[in-house]
Image (cartoon, rainbow, N blue to C red):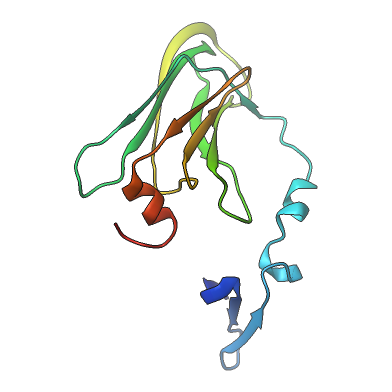
Length: 156
């Protein structure tokens, strides 16, 4: 069993436990076990996921005690296309955190134009906001200070 925790200044601790006692190993962020994003980028791309287009982007706030929610809508060309909002992975916090609109089909496609709405609580945010990325366009949105502070590990 392996557990991973983030420590101050970007260091990581890897706790492991097999049949014997727990052991701990401290490592720097780009140590082989620390999850180098360059290594992730070199993995083969999936053929079942695709970026899809969108028509509308909105940020809605339900209450002061919950994070705002990103709402993206548009038309999809297959009835059974599952649509998700997926934040990209970064080693350092960017100015605008990119969120991709990803569609996937379950092995076959049932043709038909259908409206979709996808949501994502904004618990991750760049220093200024987010950028929604679709198949043929991208749109940036500034995000409330409270979300940016929470993304940085602080509370406003």
